[in-house]
Image 1 (cartoon, rainbow, N blue to C red):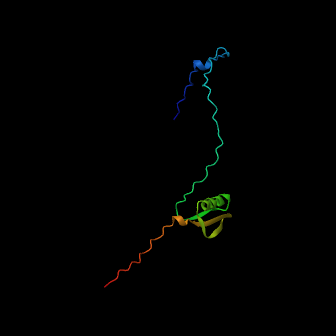
Image 2: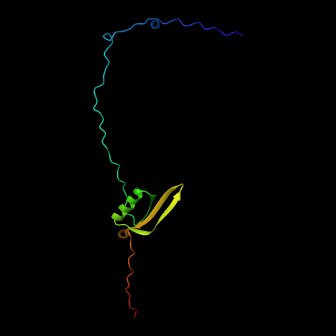
Length: 120
């Protein structure tokens, strides 16, 4: 079996023709309208938003200033510390926790009435 031999392609006329243009002969490049440089404002990181409606919370996190700020924010919102803080080390990182309560949000059961009906 013999494989058919391909004929070489004919040279293209455009490829054989080379021309050079001068700068005056080149069409002017279209330029986009000048855009105003985007302004970058320094945006401060948003402060975390905490929910202060629950009567009891267990605050947890890494032992850093962010955790201290979280506990301070809850104390400023009327919460009180409940119990001792906890601390554990996992993979070289120190995690802490603190329970807090807000007594104003605790629903107290209504007292039973002590009305005694006299039986005759």
